[in-house]
Length: 187
Ligand code: 5GP
Image 1 (tube, rainbow, N blue to C red):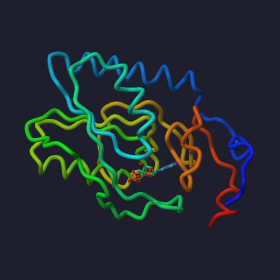
Image 2: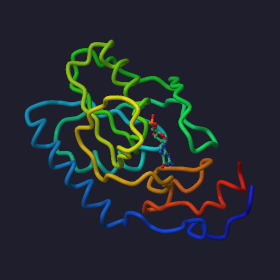
Image 3: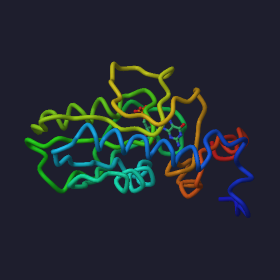
Image 4: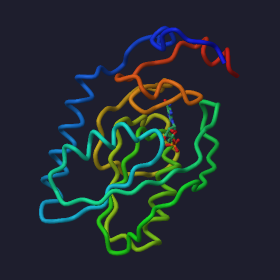
């Protein structure tokens, strides 16, 4: 692996700033507060990509919530979906009869969340909604309703604010588009 002095050197341009992310997270949190008034939803974080969004989002919520985590297989080093979804880490708690909010970093083909939604339905969740920071609707391969979304973005591979390429860039506080040479170096 290259020694990178500065991760920002790999970023072609910033797509979404820290301030814009902050406002979107606040807006989604307020909407959830209103929609779930009187309820005790369970927030499920889809690891690892949604982790940064998740921790910011739950702090905007003023309801008695529970949290849980799930890890599923993703693209690995490639930037393209494989369509194969596998649970690497399952929930710790039973969600039967619970109102569930699944928190994801980005919806691309929609295959991952379609699978997760089906699994949680089979486990008897009483309602399931999806909150995603980013949405790439152009790439959708399934019918999937996204209930809360931060930004609709073009079909570009983005990193930062939890999203990685080859496990790097998750700690960038904004969302950026990677320089094409980065893919060419690694693939
Ligand atoms: P889907 O099943 O909707 O195609 O894939 C969703 C997952 O693909 C996301 O959770 C994320 O891990 C990955 N993904 C899709 N697009 C991007 C992208 O532009 N950047 C990064 N870093 N991951 C992406």
